[in-house]
Length: 156
Image (cartoon, rainbow, N blue to C red; front, side):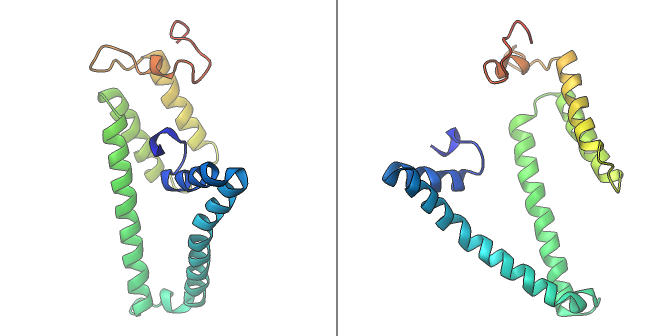
């Protein structure tokens, strides 16, 4: 069921279970009961980290060490998620080059201008539209989007 729903699977499943058991109101209540505890805990964590701002800024403090460790863990989690996404969705040298080039551009250009992310998305889409990626089974990646974008396979 979770693979058929858009968005974060666990949140969608919480809403879906509530809807199937008690209708729309049950879905809203189930979803909010799933979301609110995490939102409350993260809000409290934000207030605690704000109150420890001076201690975090001090290089040899325990608060600074904890903040650095949390940052490292966050970077590692993002890397694991992105690498799993790339392994699952990126086939071929062309898509790999587009992904690597986009990531490198985002890392190198700092601060990023407001137009950069939409520009990179447009550029990647234009490259794959002009030069379709041929998958291992001989199909093109663009044809899989049929009926999702309103375009037929012939138009793509």
